[in-house]
Length: 484
Image 1 (tube, rainbow, N blue to C red):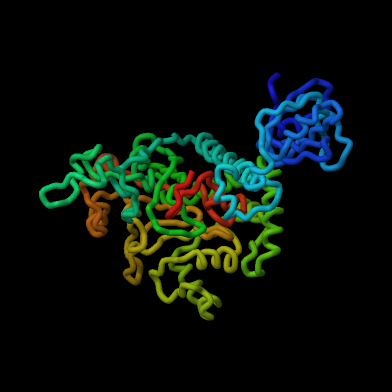
Image 2 (cartoon, rainbow, N blue to C red; image 1 turned 135 degrees about the vertical axis):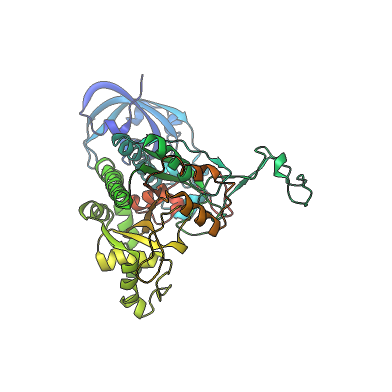
């Protein structure tokens, strides 16, 4: 008999039709009440058995974490806490779980620290917290594709292996098939990459943006959604060495249109989560409330999870130039009283998360889009503005700032002028031979175009309220950690 998912059964009406459910035991009380979960919902299905109808040997195998199949009828629940329950006729053990072994793991029915859960990442999706986070993650992933497909975008599968550095930062993972103990050397004593698989130095990609730009020049509007890699030795709660990026690129869009697109997109996916992940978000919100109770007031979340998400939907994003933001920060109380870790003293400072959060949470009290950043703190591909009245050079860059997190989206209008782009690459020491193809697109019908990047895990963090990025991806890759 085909088994049914618990999420659907909990919404169904009682019926005398015999059904089968399969899942993992969360608890077994009084030899009678099995709390069963199959991963389709945060909620368990209560299965009620008559112990006299079963051998003791079988009852002794209905342990926490064991996999079972239960066949019976869905009836109105006589107890509180659930609308329906399964009146069991047969129970079959599908996979045993030794209670002594379970007690050594995070599957044991007690609270565990998130750090402990990370050490058993292969099991943590069986817990309520990670089951909820990963269901929300899956819903957000679907919403990303849904938005772009509904708005006429084409998905471009950009390469994972690349010979170029899209960000120009050099923090890339190198790929090679050469013998690391005895690599071939050239006449100058350097590694001879001509003998390597790709006959040149190659790396894992840090971004699909540059390739996506070339596709926007033929398809009009495209997006990428794939894994990216940064060999940045940042052992923080906001950085991963491997993460997923969403990067749309649109021909003929200027910076204003890019800001319109990014605001519309982020509101769409947040609303999708609110509309389709109610039970999981309720659980995660309650978890956050309980967690905040043990924290000092200053470290607590600025608003409850659902209110924070609704805050994004209800407020228009305030658009503020970098120059205006610097003036606000310089004269702010935290800056004057030296409460900021990084004091703002002059134009040109690279804004930190504390500055971004001040603008969103304290000054404007709404999501903020900062634009027109100093050219020397941004990437080579961003369009250069004419110098301002004081001779300062800025680029058509923009960042979206959210409460509790700071920057969540970064984007720009791209430099479409061949001569200007070539000069910027020369100034920043980016080899022309690496990106000749990127430069060449500026020779054949080059047009204004824009795009942005959104680190998917940062989005999942924001929507779920999780405070560490390692807890919103199945198997986090961080400095010193490539387990599982």
